[in-house]
View (cartoon, rainbow, N blue to C red):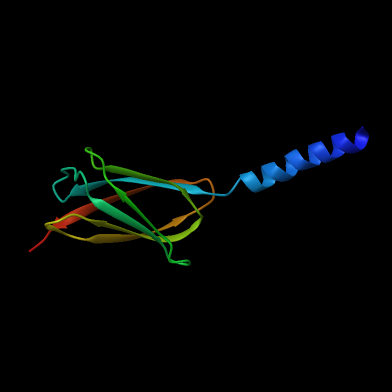
Length: 108
């Protein structure tokens, strides 16, 4: 009986160690140089060390969110037709909720 209890508790502890992964969340708002929001802008978040990329779109208010990012260095690029792309570098730490605001410039 004690052996079964030991392995049951050990199993729960072992599973909880593997279930929790250190991650961060990146969110932001994309606006133009006048401060007007940019709905449906494409945001690409690229991990500088691994090359893994995440792609999201801004909502009607210009906001985007990407949860569950591994900690590390990232390049965040926002694009929208008629505007020049903007790229920002950001470093994310474990359990960090980071805000990134980018202003797109009018294309010439």
